[in-house]
Image (cartoon, rainbow, N blue to C red; front, top):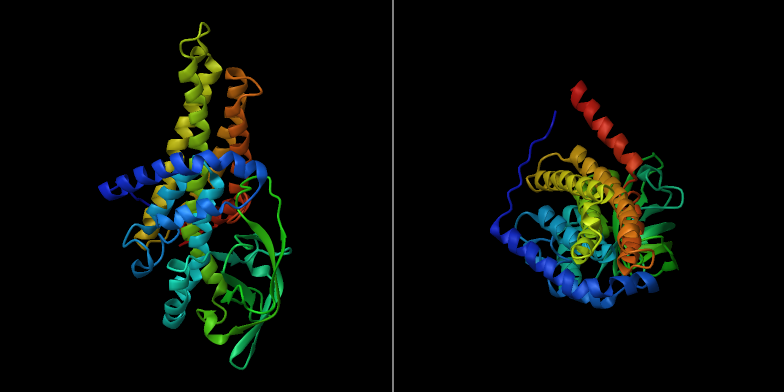
Length: 388
């Protein structure tokens, strides 16, 4: 009933983690507060991520991807960057999520045409699934795709589209049948007539991530841009979740680690103070609980990722990793804000960082399936195993 996966990182992955950590600390961290405060998409960080090959980790090797441990490497990169800036970490996730239908369901011709545009041409990809009336219920989408000769006409609207206003390519889920759940993915270019960008959302957290509405008004899409077969869209989306949910867990894990480090750094600086704040029981309890929850989160995230890389079923663990990590990130960031009030007072710069991390953590409980949905997935998987 319980999947086993033991993760022993190779020297290559250890070195990879160190390089991403240094990059995040030196180049991304100094801009994190400004990006959050002014609510803008940071093109400098985007270029930095392209330069270091972090936006193509899950791509085929010939298009800039790595040869093995793709999910584990994605989680490592996301975790290290999220310690300093969750918005920047999300850019890695959505690039992997949006490219998944193209890589795993696109024809050889589609991959040959578009993957170079995304890797060497540095085009971002957005994942257009969520709609005003279909969030967690992917099968309830209303966007339609009607076959007319050698093309499809797409009509509908998408919301909360991460990278929607900055992407050059879109993986779009649309109904290809009146039967509920019968949907299909299509590759749509930004330049296709009828595609337009709506408002940019003002979010509570992860403000540096571009999130918009996208409208599709009689968008003419070549039939060869159908990804997979008609009616396979829901199945592709579910497989995509098996890859993306551990990565969201890794993002939440990084946020939690970043928050805990704020307390530890404050304690280190105050250890010579006349008042031995490090001995306060309330602070010790927060530190102990946070450290324990972080280790538990790390175990779930990387167990789920390694199972995915091994081609084994990880649906249950992927949902566990996402749900648990997001919940503990919320708990830890809340506790850290309380602890910093004791340590540094209301106006502490570290407290402002903790407040940003608190808002960023909340979003991890919402996207890629809310945590309420994750609990349903976990229970259903458990009952499925029980019943055979």
